[in-house]
Image (cartoon, rainbow, N blue to C red; front, side):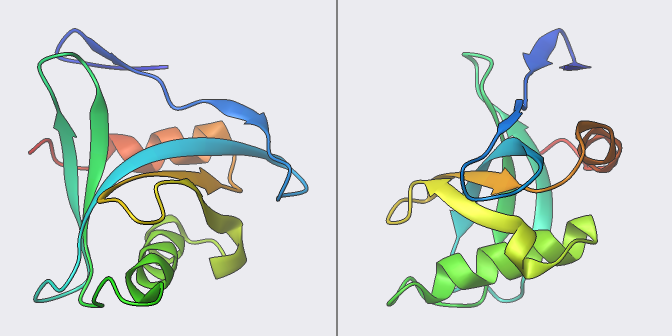
Length: 116
């Protein structure tokens, strides 16, 4: 569990039915049709919920933005594209991703992100 400015961030480790290993779930907020693909940082709402903010150049058309999200997160985390899948929110800006990565590796990456 991660702490940031007295807000508890709780990515979870659990068994994922679509992935052979334990995985981490990660809440993201996606802005499609952006100028470039990038991980912007972490934003936290007043209620304590936090999301990794992503921008992708792909439009939200026929799953193009979703594929770009998986590719971007895989690249950022240094894992294969198959290690990232969308658990929930395929048609929403707010998504829950399943990441086939250790909790320790995810935490180390997450801590490097700027707070926006």
